[in-house]
Amino acid sequence: MPSDCWRKWLRSVKTSTARINCIDIPHDDGPTIVLLHGISASWKWFAHLFPVLSQHYRVVGLDLPGFGGSAFSRHHLTFDGLAAAVVDVCDELAIDAPVILGHSMGSMVATRVAVRHPGRLDGLIITGGPILSLVHLVRHPISTFRRNRRSVATLVAESAVVGLPLPQPVAGLISGSASLRQAALGAFVARPDLLDPEVVRATMQDLGAPGTFPVLASAVTSDPGRDLEQVRCPTRILRGDGDPLSPPDDVASFLSRVPSADEMRFDHTGHWPHIERPRRFVEEVHRFVSPGDDPLRF
Image (tube, rainbow, N blue to C red; front, side):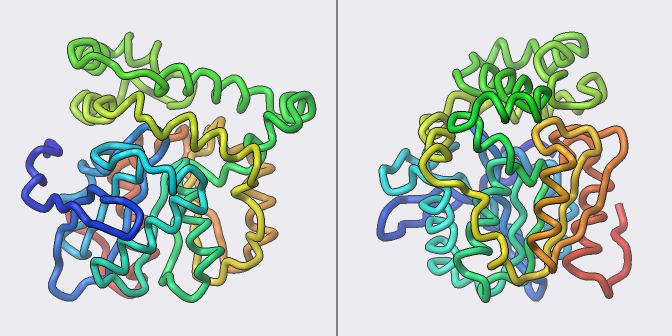
């Protein structure tokens, strides 16, 4: 279902430091899942999951400050600043004890919420992560490159893809061609040729967001992977086994520091499990959020 079909649920939430664009799909009695996108993305990256998730949960997807429909804000140039924006939106929308699901950069923001507000979350889901090693690239370039050559190369490739706006005719051309999808996304997605062209087109609408490089640069002065021992809520990593940006050592380090965390691995999957394996992804989300409920029906 195209992301445009969900626009009736769009909201603009004013906090003390920013106005945040978000989608808020209500549900009478289900838990709330807050979705946080990756770098140079928006809530649209999750829209293909809404038809199933919204049957069981209140679904809130944010455009983090400087991304999607949310304006760039000097108050939110760091991962902690973005985490504060998430908490402010939850306060404004009267969301108590949500499960926060973050992809890639969003997983880092979600983790900062769990670190700084350990009693606030009902659960934390990380996908396209954890990303722990790459944040040291600028401070320790040689050692980081030696230990994680593929991760560094993929980060460079991804930055080239997401850093600049993409004209919509070009986005349509890439999304509609299996060979062009392979060329553009092959560095961090296991099988770009199998992706849904409509989903790929939607993901390309927000490239070149103004928050992209300032937020990446903030990792130089403040490690977003610090204080992981403060995470208390149940935590699950939904990880592609071929994710080049989150190497096995990062996962092992995260699991050793967060006793409440476990890992569910997706075979033949890269950095976008929610896009590469959407059906299994929502099944695993449902199993984590509502372990006593019946399996999803599609």
